[in-house]
Amino acid sequence: ASFESKEGVAKRYRAIVHGTFSSPHGTISEPLDGKPCESEWRVIQTVTIASSQTTTGSSSMTLTLLDLFLHTGRNHQLRRHLARIHKPIVGDARHGWETKDAALLASRPESSTAKQQLQLMLAAVEITFPHPDCQQAIRATDTMGSSNSNATTTAKQQPSPPSDAVEKCHSGEEGGASAPLQTIAPPAPKA
Image (cartoon, rainbow, N blue to C red; front, side, top):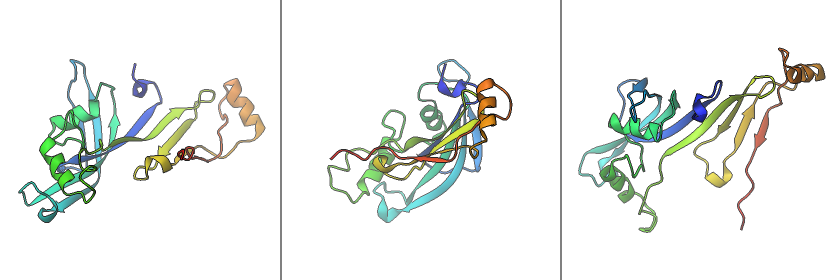
C-alpha cells in the first residue's frame, strides 16, 4: 500500500507546470493502470515569461506554481495526471513537453553545460501523520525554494504537556502528549 493511503497520513507536493488554469483549484479523477485514481491541485501563482525571454516563437510562455495532493497512490500519478490535462511539470523528461522545456533552457543565463537539462520541478513539501502513541497530528514542512543543502524542516505540534498527559499518551488515554515546536536542519554539506 502507498504511504498516502495509510490512515491519517497526508502529503502536500509543490510543482511548477506549463500553462494556466481557469479555476483556482480542482481535481483530476482519471484511472491509471486500470485503477481509480484522484489528484487534487490548487493554484499558488501564475507567471508569464515575455517573448524576449523565450525562443519558442510564441509571444509568451506561462508557468503555474501548484500545491498538489494525492488521494490515491499510483506510479508517477501527479506527473501523469498533469500531463493528461496538458499541464505537464517543468523538467519532466518522461511525461513533459520537451519543446517547452527546451525554450526555458535556452532562456537561462548559465553556461551552456548548465543548460543541458532542467530539474523536475516537483517536490514533497509537507507531510502530516499521527503520533504513534497518542495519534495527535504531527506536521513536517520543507521550505521549497531554498537550496537542497540548506533546506529546513519544521515539525509542529502543540506545546509540551504536563507529565500526566505524557503518561496518558503512552497509556492510550485521550489528551495525550505532544512535543514542542522543533526546527531540524540537515547536516552541512561535506567539503
